[in-house]
Length: 337
Ligand code: NDP
Image 1: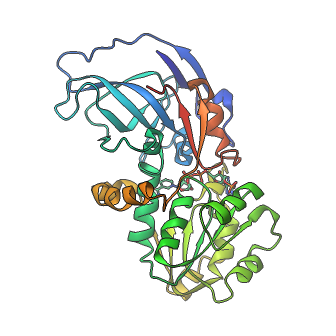
Image 2 (image 1 turned 90 degrees about the vertical axis):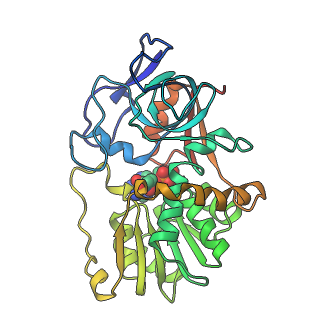
């Protein structure tokens, strides 16, 4: 069983050498007396929150990785053996699994049975998995969006952002996204149908830049990056604006977060900035599928993935998220069947 092992806790930017590939043996039968399932992993998801699991801080909404043990995270897998009443051999599932060829998953982990297979299976690492649910719950539940509103999304071409932007366009909002390369800006405008997009790395003055794109201010900010961008957004928010505080990736590798100079604007402009965690909304997953499957099938929503081949490529793929090497949802293919 080839595995990607987490070496030890990390400070600063993670490096490939913080993980290593090794091989161990695993029985392909679930031990008697347990309710576990044994899966063959097909697709693994690289997600920014995994950086927080590389710190030895307990008691947050996710626990740290275990040094010396395989990385765990979202993935798509096929059930090879099961003693769990809800899963049987041959089922396709998505949920928390290991960065390894085969995983024994205890009954406590959150696993969803895959029902629709007329779309790429890898979609369950992204648009039809955790990232999709994040975009869906963050936009519809937290932002209370209305037709015609002005929406800004940071890290907009990523796994979550590309979908939020398309939801907002389908609702009839004016949508602007930021991203870190020209290629991504082109995707936003030409593939995902954003009204405007800009490369934040080329902007000297983010406050002035946002003012240019939103002369009347921003109603909704879908926050993925934090730091200087959040600061610049705050002064450009309209009265009663909403910010979905989804993530702050620009802060994840800093030992100390940057100060948010304009934070008090939240009070002055009665902005509701609400933290949320996707887990709380998983009961909406059937509703989400009802909404999204027709859009995917009719081509009204498209999805870009960045596919890395082979388990060995997983560490590079993961750390690439923090320098923006991924274009779209970063997926690792372990096996295709
Ligand atoms: P992405 O697919 O967007 O990948 C990460 C992207 O972040 C990179 O491609 C890069 O794009 C951008 N980025 C990296 N470093 C910086 C930086 N220093 N400043 C600005 N941008 C940076 O990831 P996801 O769509 O999966 O996640 C987006 C956000 O949503 C993250 O903050 C994540 O933590 C959060 N999230 C929150 C969840 C929740 O439950 N609250 C669940 C899932 C995700 P670029 O080239 O544009 O810089």
